[in-house]
Image: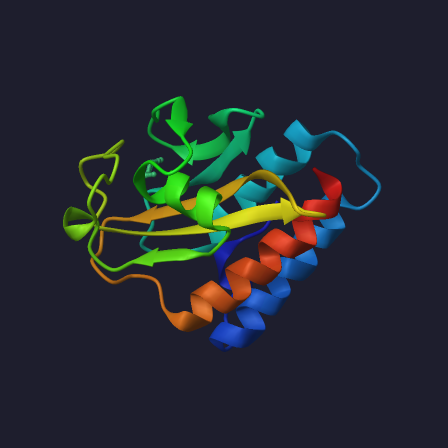
Length: 159
Ligand code: SME
């Protein structure tokens, strides 16, 4: 649907374009699985040097694996456990430069070196998290965090 060559601007321009593409994909669609699936596919073809991009959804008790791109991953993550469970329980984005130094990191793909997890909260209710892994240490910058939080916020009304 989209080709990588479209993302030929600055980092800011490229992120703004991908958020515009996200909105075009989800607007008018109410099915959360469809919207999360397209969002994970969109991020996977946009972001360089990543090996996993997807979602965990809160079922009222714990995080459960949702739509994603990448290797098969652990299905259930208790709140407070790993990078995802920590982001979910604190409500704060976790940007982990080196996952081997993060106590309790859950290694789904042994190749993962750094990770960013953005909590998705709607009207004080935890909906889930956006999780992206990279095989490169320190892959995610403050700019990535800024735009991935915007990406997650743009998706939130549609899930
Ligand atoms: N590494 C995550 C688990 C999910 S996988 O990366 C897909 C964590 O520690 O929460």
